[in-house]
Image (cartoon, rainbow, N blue to C red; front, side):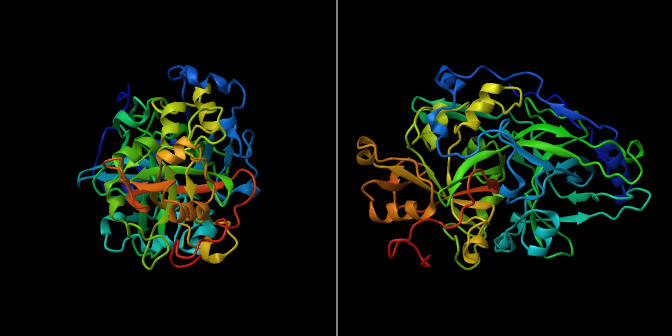
Length: 469
């Protein structure tokens, strides 16, 4: 059970320089690395087959070792460890105000930027669609303030960002499978956005919008077992020592290890990082922060139309299951064959291997930064508009509910074979027309584990989507 083992003592509101100095001093004084010290509950017997690489891992590319830098779309990633299923990312200090009288230290990551110059400079994904994030939804973008420390306070390094809000990581994440795995019998997000919080930020005075989720709060120690003050994805965290304890002129980086997720794009296996979702159930499945404002981002069903900040993602409610099944995919597979109820803990080998070998939902993504056509590459957005598919009884009985791995084949199938694949109403579980279901997930792509995705798949059937691809 998730417990509150650390609650930061709120600071009285002070001037920005005083807060800056206090926050930097508190962070620097820690100089710690935190890892899960105890394993979570034992893996179910259904996962015993993972003692050897199960068939569900077929087609997932590299499964162990460090992902080569040439395979990253996110150059700022320090490493992607496929044996331990984490991405190590730099983390940056900030402060978040609760109301008008208190502030707490926060740590955030940088994943995407709406302008190419900022993306290149920071080593993050270029996502032009982020520029549309605030259309008709001011609460979808958080205006933050970059503080300007004196040289004595900051010889070299990041400056504090002042956030209007932060997530509350103290709730207990609950994910109890139902009789058939999915739908879940009980669920509760393990992190919830506080007032004013969204992961998409705009520094006052700048037009660039960044994807900058907060992944930890307070001055430590950081709980990476029960995740009471860290994201449910955080499996390790290191706060750099004070500059006074570092060699002269040296910059020592703070970082966090975060659980990655596997999927497909353009027929190739990819890895990404899911941090936020606009709905409670989605937040539970993705081990993400529930951010209700994301429901109002422009716009449901938009994809590549004028003003859209979203890109399409394809999930399957009732794909095939079984850890020794190369066609396993989707929500039922995730609920039946994976440690869906367990905390993400780096020392839990059974949990790590379950996710490493294909225990994820294995969603199919739309546009990706490596696609050859700039129209597709520049259409990438970290905010994904889910299009959920449900295989018909005919498809299930005939074994045609096979694993899907590229966008265009899914669209062609939904268009030409409604006798096999339909949409699904997430509120009722009943079939409906295929398309957007109003489920939004912040999932920044990290890289690919085999060959770079170059095309979205085979040509589309005429009329299967607009504009023609």
